[in-house]
Image 1: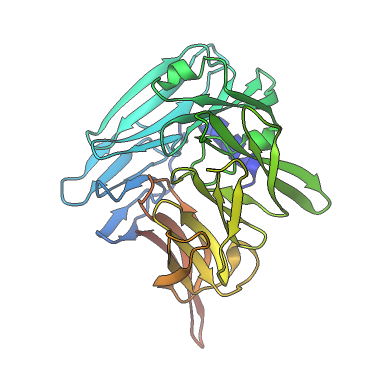
Image 2: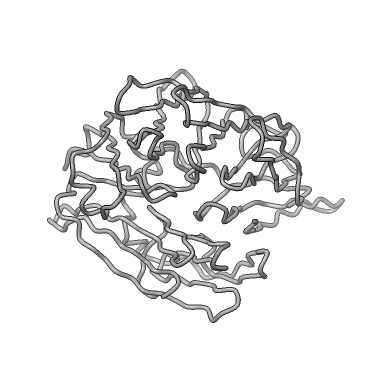
Length: 379
């Protein structure tokens, strides 16, 4: 299993929308280990989860959306057809998931689906005037909107726009002149709408205006170069970091602090945008990071050097970092697996909701080598 390329993500997003797949895969049941108990599901692709509300929801390719409530009866939405969240709102009083469907060639307008996971209700709102929008994403604070746009019907002339979402709904913000507009390639635009795999994010900066962390992708012999740029409304783009492998920027942030993971080295970088000059601090840690939440300082990593990329072998550990230091000290917490391979984070939750991981555990005997898939929600 390999992490999908940006182009593959874009193709999947545009083809999927809110319609899902026309044909279901053969049924099977998987056990998901969580701190609140074991969940059995035939749709092991988490759509959203919340530590605050003790809830985890899965998107199924036949349109169903089973919702598991720890401590109260489970529920089911039958016609959701949503496998990827464009927005997660996780507050004391609500837990909502947003999904976007782009306009159709038949004249069907773009639409926004909102699922209330606490009440088990669904609403769909048409977004008139958003005919050039391919995907949207709302940040974890719910105050900044990113839209990936292209010139229809050829889907070329790609650009990303950022909008201040404070005090206005998505339908209004998406049709207002953007606070920032950046010309990009199709691959660079493909990140928008993916809270887990994304490499471009936005937030409201210290000056009260949207800030965009944009990843440029430049083909080079044997692969691609990924360059993280900071875009603001009042300055030229500033180069933050470059790597020869995929770059992942956290969808969760704490104030003006975000995290990025360098796919080439496995290093974790903490980015502070509170000052005029951004501060990027690389965490001292012997291992390859898969996930980090700057809200509570928790993450997941392969301890030790391991093999390059996501195929590195265990031990796979849950990590806790001291948030009170500029250069945090990170220590191992729970050992997830001593013999894990091919571990990936998946699903999307609000800040502090932990991480959902898929990994394979390897057991070797004189007679055979056994590979067992595992699914864990850790927090």
